[in-house]
Image 1 (cartoon, protein in one colour):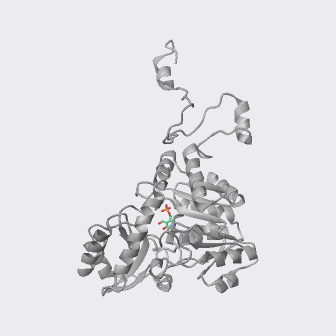
Image 2: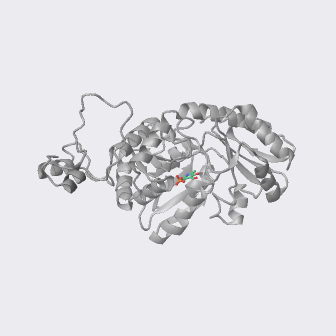
Image 3: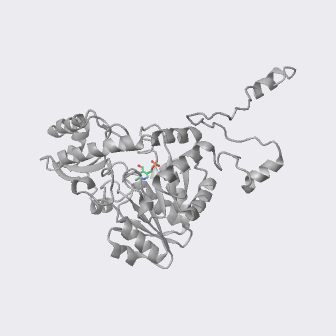
Length: 387
Ligand SMILES: Cc1ncc(COP(=O)(O)O)c(C=O)c1O
């Protein structure tokens, strides 16, 4: 800024430089700007029409979010992707993008509590009808389909009882009946399971969990066929739940080590599940790796749950007794954490609904971290001895 301008003018415009583009920064810069400047109206029009690549206003798209969207679509094998401020932001965009008043969805009974609340408390107000079924019973899914059904919604590995969805069977049924199969892949992560490879149309993840991996961000992503993703993006942009540049940047950084973290987290989960299985203070252990499952690769995921003998009081004593594993109503961190679905993630469901799904007051959910497995097992061993 020329020196003959007033101090305040120079201050307001200070630091405006053109960054040379001959070399590429190895770590993508954080584009901490809400808006982009245009030299003239010709370029505005060209960018709006898609003739020139450029960014306009960060709610419509920005480089860090786009980097994450490309990364997630690539890891899941999708044609296109979107990112949102949270996992629920992504689920909201998917459901509002693909459903309308009068439409019907067949939804898994084994569903994250907030997604259930989104269907029951919000989509219901806009005239979207829902039927909840055991989506691994393909006969029940087929029987629930109506002429106005638009999609089937499942979790690849369910929260919190870690049931693995029959994705090939559901995908075939959806293809035959002209429906979209939408899969929340948060618990598995694309390292363990890639629903699009089994015929799903749209896959969603709360990137707050394994993709981010360090409990330091909130983000959501979705990927899949371009036609659906275009509608989903329109819903997302108008809903305004866009991801901010720093959270997008952090998520991409987390994603680079997803395979290393989750590989270790899966082997730790298997060892812990084997330890808990048959333990005298444990009634039941849910972990798909105990019996093995053909859809899961690179391990059976880092999520397990178990029922401790002695009801809610015993679960409370266990949680108090754990030293390494903290009670955290989230998952996917590099440290081992535990949660209590009845009091947190599945609060929105009635006690009868929860009981039907095996979500009991003594159920503790575990997200295994990357620590030395001996230390994780010793922590649970000691805490269980005090239950
Ligand atoms: C399976 C599943 N899907 C979606 C979400 C929502 O993600 P977020 O908390 O990032 O909105 C969660 C959060 O716990 C979850 O467990």
